[in-house]
Image (cartoon, rainbow, N blue to C red; front, side):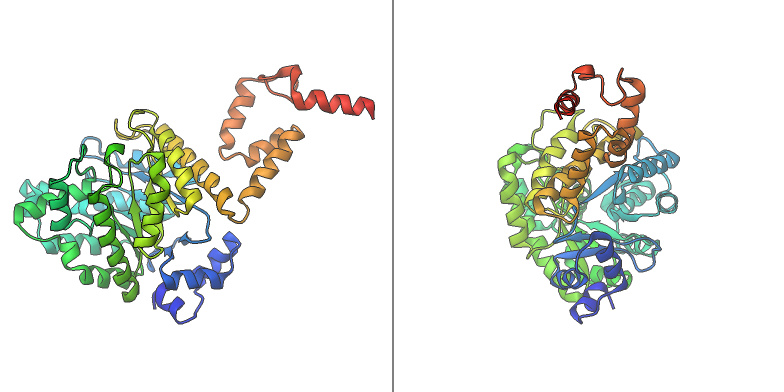
Length: 428
């Protein structure tokens, strides 16, 4: 039985028991939320990896995207990025490779990373048909489902599938006043194929076939937001919302079938749209876990989009989003470098933790309290241990050694805490 089937039958699975201990949450509560479709466990039943749970009452998780491109296809470099992302605290890795031998890249990344892995199968299907025939227009439905099955067989734990790209949403986008149009790579590939072949999206039209494949491996469908806004001026428009309604219906179909699914979200949206977007997703998709890219709250910060995404990520996590996909400083500019990956993960981890404090997630506020106590007592070893990026503390202490080991070079002998402590000690 799948995790959903076990939960609906009142059976607490081994994965749920592991997660309950790790997160300090009642296993019965987790199991009930899985049965309702409010929580998913990311783990292919053939993949020997620790499960990751995403959803209600659980810590906000962070994903890091890596992968080759058609311009830069260095698998070893992507493996190094994956390792850095995991060390920085990423809960999962998505392999978004589009260049080179994609089956080989996926196998190597999965072997080196040894964490929950997600993929976007349409990338590989498009790459293979473009290499053999020159255009995705000639892709067969069977090739697309064959690639999906290959990913599942290799142990991929969750798949981004753009089922919401339908003729209806394409027509809506055509008549809209969007600035950016379709910014989803997978969504645009499917839309191009549909227009060229005058056919409905095979992932939507044959959703039951997709469910049957996914159920066999108890993997999770990440229902992709192909019509997410790529500019804040496009936020919360009809294209985005109509697709969200479709994804909500598909989420319920998956739940009835015994397949776990979560909903992907925006994108570029201004701050005042964040809470309404969270409420829309939870309402239209019956409380399904929300997996968000950012969201990015302004369009004017190329080179600093990890910051714009962290601002949006902290807010939407606090309001109830469950899973943040990192954004790196290289977003909109280039394939991320190793340093970009680390900065992207750290920024998203900060955002996730800030949200968890507000949500009252077990241990979140206590972590900050421990850091405050360490700062008060000038315990630099403990501060380094507790820091979200211990390397940053170590680097500062080594590069800027203070005259007094209890203080730092910002205040030196005029450290506020030190001055007051000394005064109180004298008077006592």
